[in-house]
Image 1 (cartoon, rainbow, N blue to C red):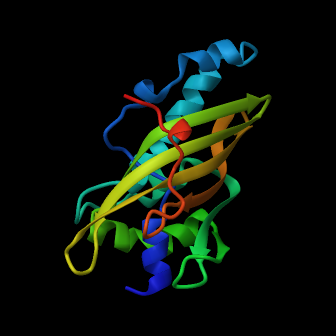
Image 2: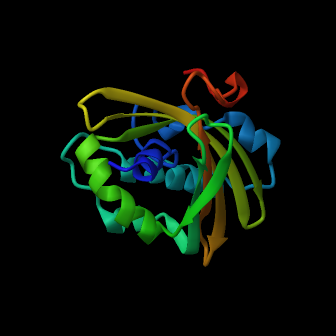
Image 3: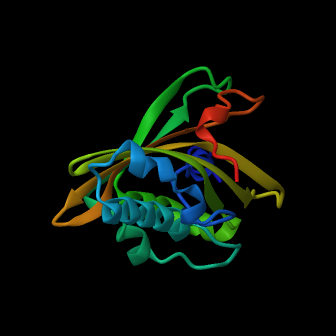
Length: 192
């Protein structure tokens, strides 16, 4: 597995079902804090983010459904992960792709490694037809040597309400790196 592909897999910070349900992550204070936002919009955004994570997760050998994965994205959507440009993890560059490019690069690895990612916290803001979710995640997979690996990071997810339906427009993610570099701050993790 080449380094960029491995980093993309590790940084899949974007995405998957796991330990928590959407309802456990839904913050009741969101409705109070944003009284102008309809309950249906809060629920729809929650459902899209939950499906985003679920569509990439699964045990070793479980096939991923490209159509299911694509269904959460708006037209012209983009995914972008921050990739290290040095072995010291002190310089990074964004790697941008379409959902189709992401699927082409990642589906086989997701299936082979048993990649599973779960949302562990969410900070949400909504204004009109746009929304932003700072979605903290943790994930696990098996590397090429058969060793269990764990990842944690934040997906910055922008959503749009187009033609009455909420969809993911962009995902930009970063993660914790070796030697506890870039830990996810506790304020972005919701306690169960």
